[in-house]
Length: 408
Image (cartoon, rainbow, N blue to C red; front, side, top):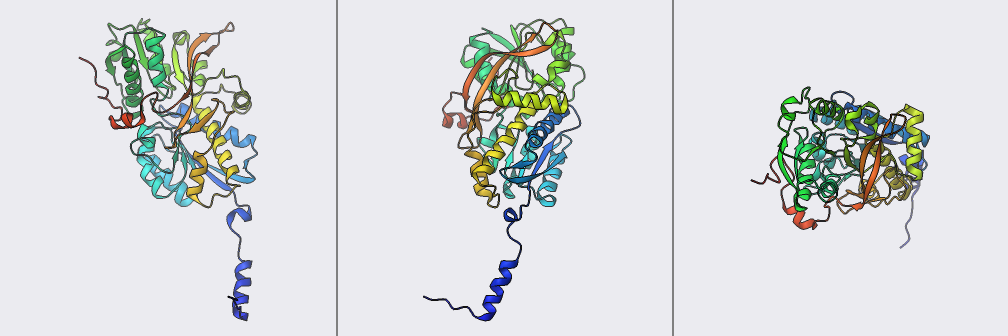
């Protein structure tokens, strides 16, 4: 059927055509907001996060997939309330297309519902398990690891290759700590080991002496401290005269902390999605950028945000720069597969969590006196469910202070 246009219709159509084009056609920038921590015991990691994504964007001249990037960094103060306030500002005032961060699990859990309600794609370093497990957020992607994703391999390595039998675990008294040690305990005990005691110092602890006094009748210690706390703990551990083998999670032996450790850290074993010695193009470039821009050693926190930048860039390329449809944007993020990142190859599962390598490292002293992590073993393509059946894994409680329970 023919459609007739009258003079008024034609004029109206011409006026509409003269209106501003959609943002992508106008060359409007993509807006990326970062939730990070710059004060308190977690600030060491939060500052590195900002350095990692800033180094990536500067190297790209703040342009990804042909779109200019506006980058806004917000300090949450390391609190749930601060994370809520800053997330609202980024979304309602700054109209960001993506949120990177936050750092802490308790911050992430505080804003998850708000992020989903506003359909804002978020790529976080925070490791809260249920964000990609029992209560998945459809607008969430994690390219780092869940709290237990590095601890599962560590539990296997401690039992089967270090041949530890009885250990004490010690970590901050918050969600990241519970989930780290729950993951370690499950795999360690499935392979013949036993956790005999769990110690939970507060996040802000100046003196670990009361906890160190409880480390008895074991052949190893597993610590999962984050931020700057590993420095304090290992120093006090050595000062107490303890010489048992120490294992740690992804934050416990962070490469960026090594210049600040003393001889007390030599020999410490850690498990991490990133290792400074990985010999590939992306890691060489990342380390050079961190040295050039900040004169600092590259570590897990910075690598995590650098990789988030790579994931955003790959998704934008797949979308031809168009971020107008949030559902298509999150689908593109979760479809990303990268072969060359500072942590090696990665892709995502159907819940938006990364599948990638986990590295077992040992702190060693170089001839020049500097400390470095030497990779001992690589666990390839580690899932958030380890080797367990997904349905059975999700049917058990989330790892907590009391789960798995200590055996009598």
